[in-house]
Image (cartoon, rainbow, N blue to C red; front, top):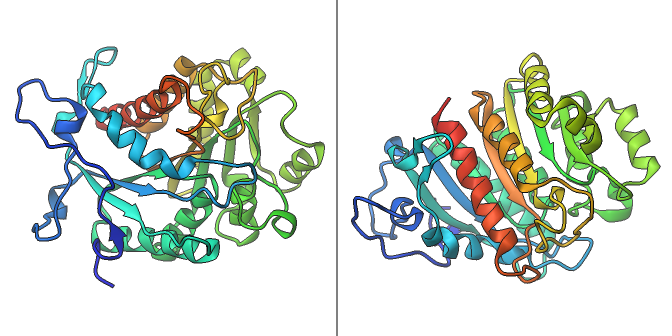
Length: 326
């Protein structure tokens, strides 16, 4: 199987890059054609679209997210004024999208796992950022990483309204089960998972009991606000750094309050504000052990005035700001 094409699909959309002293993100992030010679050694960050949402418990258009994110790149500058950081010194390459089967979810999951294995084989020095897709993709991506690096202990830093610990027997490998999938497959130990952002009436007591039994670390949003978002994230990272070799960051956009993220499949009241999430993402991006990230459960078909997509792009760029400032 030739990588990246035809294993992957070329980006579903890309901008004609303009040469400018004041580039937009669309002018900065690179794509390539089939005939191009790729010098992966010169690449710092790779972007991979994972357009799968048939595995969602609730109806979801999250498969449209990679396209929607790329289309908004022209609306952003690669400069973060609050951190006085120019991102253009980073080489960022858009690899395109993982191929998906129309009806076979298990086959689509296999393709996702194989895509991560290929990324770790052909350019293991680059930092991969995956644009989901629903949250089921996280289990497959982490399994692909573990297959490539069986000697590494993997930690998970998860920003989410939900535990994502539902029963695999009842739900299968859906967007409600990725963390349980990783624990029960032996890919990740429960004690090496940190979930920040749980709130309200959106998790059952049985899932909390499962988390406690498997020693999953979790901080409710109420607790995080009392302690401070930055202190909470730093504590999670410090704890993981003592126990694991690599940290995988997964950002479920439904961690945001529905006022800030109307475009998610399972919007909730009482969630994070965007400024809280951006602060958390910058800190995570700054940590040297955070070596992969995904953004999931963003539904452009439900969005209002591109509020949620813009928040997703902001998360993506904020993470890169932290990464560059390590």
